Structures are given as C-alpha cells and as structure tokens.
Length: 187
Image (cartoon, rainbow, N blue to C red):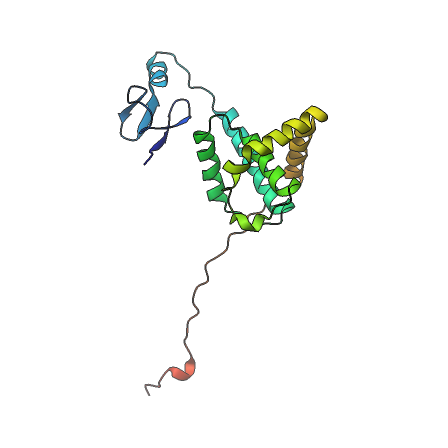
C-alpha cells in the first residue's frame, strides 16, 4: 500500500513507502520533505520556490477537461475523482503531462467518437489511451504546425467567455407527515 505525501518545500508529491528512507525526512508529524529540499530550507536566507507555475498548469488543464466533458461531450463528471486521478497518473507516470492527458481525452472522445457515458464520470481509460492519443496529436502537429496550441487557446478563450457554473445537488429532506386530522383535541 502506498503512502503518497507532498513535500512542504517544493510541492512535489512522492511515495514514502517506495522511496528510500534516505531520500526524505519527516521533522515533525505529517511534515514531509525531500532531503535536498530540507537542506535548502535549513540554509539561512533560503527562499521557498515559486509553486504557482506548476499549479497554474494543473488548474488550467483540469478546467479544460471539465469544460470539454460538460460542453462538448454533454456529459456529467465527478470533479473530485477526476482531480485525484489526474494527480495519481502524473505521479505514477513521470513522462505524462496534463496537456497530454487533455489531448488524449480529446482524441479518444472527439476524434475516435467513443461514448463518455461508459466512463462513469472519470478518467479510468486514460492509461490505455494516453500514448496513442498523444502520438496522434504529435502527428497532427507535424502536419500542420501549431494545431495543439490553437486548440488550447480556443479552450482557454471559451473558458473565459463561458464560466463553469457548478450546480450542487441538494439532498432531499423527507417531508413531515403531519396532518391536522391526526391531532386529537384535548378539550
């Protein structure tokens, strides 16, 4: 069983059970660091690395995937499950990118015309289609330069114009079964 944690200094996730104990340190309970990050942190005058760039990439492609599913495929998606799967796939497969995940899904559902309803609201098909989907887009990029950047720009413009409105389903509360006829008069 894996124990995935996030380095408090660099923000990169790692598995404490698969990584050698000499590669990470836990100075306080639930505070995990890579050894290199810990030594950098302990140096006087050290500055924490800017994590915005990696998070912005993740967030933008995550939003693009949600837009693609809801608007283009007219489907329903499980937001938390998709987010978790994206981070797990990225951690497990170091050569994967969030852009590649988005483009592989676009290839599988839009170009290959597969049905989103079979996905059960998540990205479980991604490990099976990632390399085929990214290879398709590499070939398209060779044929016509800039096609993938145009698709990404189009999705970002569309996201700015049409913001996602999340509708949370409220749990139905049982109605009271109280009737005036059932109340007895005490008089």
